[in-house]
Amino acid sequence: RPFGPHDQYLVNFNSFYLKFMHKLSRSIIIIICFICFGLFCSSRQVNAFGVSPSPLIRDNVANGVKIPVSVTLLRADDSKASEINVVQGSGEGFRYLSLPKMNFIFPAGQQRMDYEFFIAPETAPNGKYEAIMIFEKKSLPGAGASLTGSGASVQEAVGVRVVFTVTD
Image 1 (spheres, helix red, strand yellow):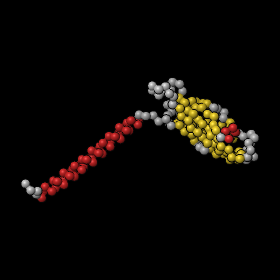
Image 2 (tube, one colour):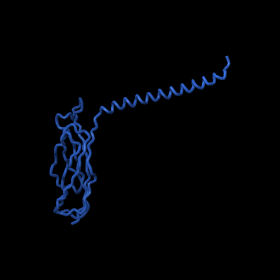
Image 3 (spheres, helix red, strand yellow):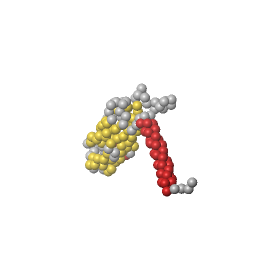
């Protein structure tokens, strides 16, 4: 039978329907992928460790004067206590820093913790000095630090740049 005037609309409708279903099925597949990706990623714990401010800058530091300074350590996972070690830093100015604690405990339940130290030059020539302090975070024994089956412990470290100018 030859095409009639209504058959044209049927062909257009079928074409539209097929295109619509193709786009809909592609959208459904993309949505399913996002859901699966979201479920997988949400089960992962974020291990973020940071320090603020960086760089830490002080001007007009005088010999024989201890200047207290403070940095804030930040972490995302506060469910377990961690041991923090201040690792020997680098830079010419590091020898003029007075660090009262080289290791301390970051208690469970806290996401922020202040660490206070001193810029304390005694006989530094005038000029600009830089130092890098490294804070290393280790999970305490029994706090689930080992990766399953490997026996490796997870450690994170962050550095803070300390810049100061001695003007005597």
